[in-house]
Amino acid sequence: MESESAEPAASANPVEPAVTTCYRHPKVESYVRCTRCDRYICPACMREAAVGHHCVECVKEGARSVRQARTAFGGRISAVPVLTYALIALNVLAYLGEVVRPAIVDRFEMLGARLTGPDGGHYLWQAHHPADFRPEGVVDGEWYRTLTGAFLHLPPTEGTFGIVHIVMNMVALWNLGRVVEAQLGRVRYLALYLLSALGGSVLVLLLAPDAPTLGASGAIFGLGAAYYVMARRLGADMNAVNRIMAGLLLWLLISAGYTSWQAHLGGLLAGGVVTFAYAYAPRDGRRALVQGAVCAGLLVLLVVLAVGKVSALRNGAV
Image 1 (cartoon, rainbow, N blue to C red):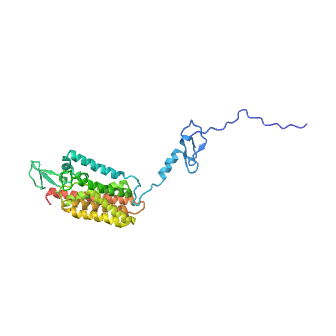
Image 2: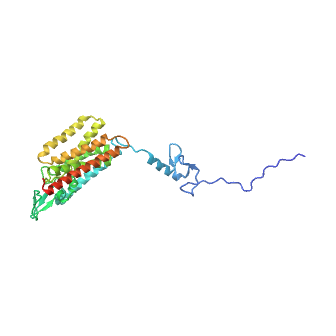
Image 3: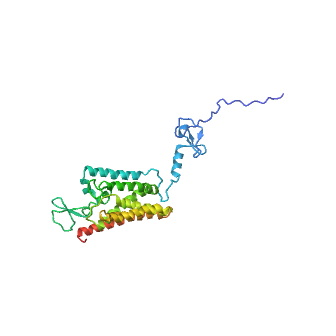
């Protein structure tokens, strides 16, 4: 008698396939894995990739690891000259403030040392002065003037130029600032602008402490120096660049009789030093460190020179 082969009995409790869910949304079924971390992701968490899909966290991690594009001088590339717009706006707002309240000029213009008499008049500085005369300017601790003066301009009814003063400076800032900012990036550009402005004020303090000055010219001459140094470093056609520099230097000479050539020259020198560091720093991991060190060193030098001059003025040594 042949035995019949018994067929295997069907399981009473068949195993159901495991349900997989999104790692970020445990209540949502998902059968797609992130091709980078292999976790399950739902449609809301999927980000299309070159191969398959990535999860949100992997996309963020990838963005952090991607090297940001930089200019030849180490700055981040930006298409819109935001800082140039902002600086122009600050200068224009300050000018409108002057028109509404003219006393702003007397209070915030760059001034090294002067005396205010009991009659409200202004007098030349003397270290030893009568008790009813009051010191005025940086010599009296008004250090803010070294920067605030760079955002003020001649009121419409005063000076040789009047309103032309701010118009000329803002046109120059617009033309030079956009190019320099695009090459340096915002952080380096702002450092250049402020150090150039400070350099102009410090040279005024050193050479003409009793002369009140105002205007963005020192900072703009710094931008001119930057434009020249950058063009040479990049190997650009120097014909147009040389014409711009020749115009700035010619203006420095022509305006010496009725504007502050000290502020112009100080801004030019400071801007040249800063941009030389930007342009010729080692192009490796030390670049930002070297550039920052030169800017910090220049700042310290300007502060030391200013403090030494103020000390000499207070002691009557000059």
